Image 1 (cartoon, rainbow, N blue to C red):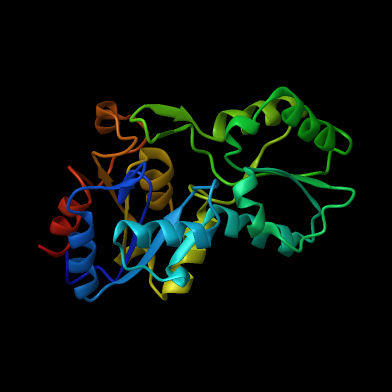
Image 2 (cartoon, rainbow, N blue to C red; image 1 turned 180 degrees about the vertical axis):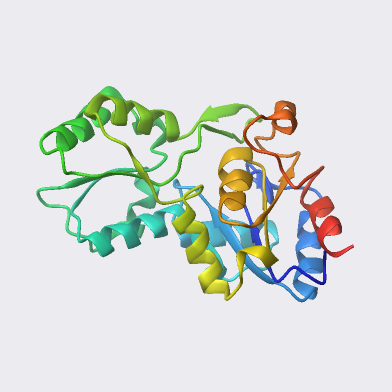
Length: 257
């Protein structure tokens, strides 16, 4: 496997860290992977932190990571907004609004949803709904399709996916996902790396969005048994990982021996 692999995409929450703690063995494992002849990118649907904050957190945990190596869902959303020249109504967490500074949001003609946390209340959802139903052509852009994540207290918590589905159902339209598992997201990362899908690997804890999304565009998908992993993931009818390993360190062992 080591002779074939050229690019490795790595999910963050649940793979390199859970809550505010690094996954045991992951820091050393990342160092070993950097010593191998592969290119690395860190891909995340985390939308409660700016990309700069994500990098600061990783460095604070002991990881050596450059900002340019991180591809985040808010970054993908901003690119989609600019590409389509949209004026977004942002239903996002306050801590990530800095990633959207400078965008024109007057008289919004699109709704962009991230993990707004406690801000997912009736008033905020209804305000987004009203923007959508005013014109059938207004897009609903989601930073991800994640159903849940493993929170810092060890329990599972609702992610943005269920709230996006509620808006899509109410407004009678399909959401456009710009983070994982969108094929365009993975292709943008591969293009930035200069790597082909057939020689690249995705390591993640989310069976559908990490593994399934990567496999759909031709990458190898490795599932780790940390983070949001559930035992039932190993017997899913829709997605079959190319490998299932205990943690990130085991994934690196599988990759480079």
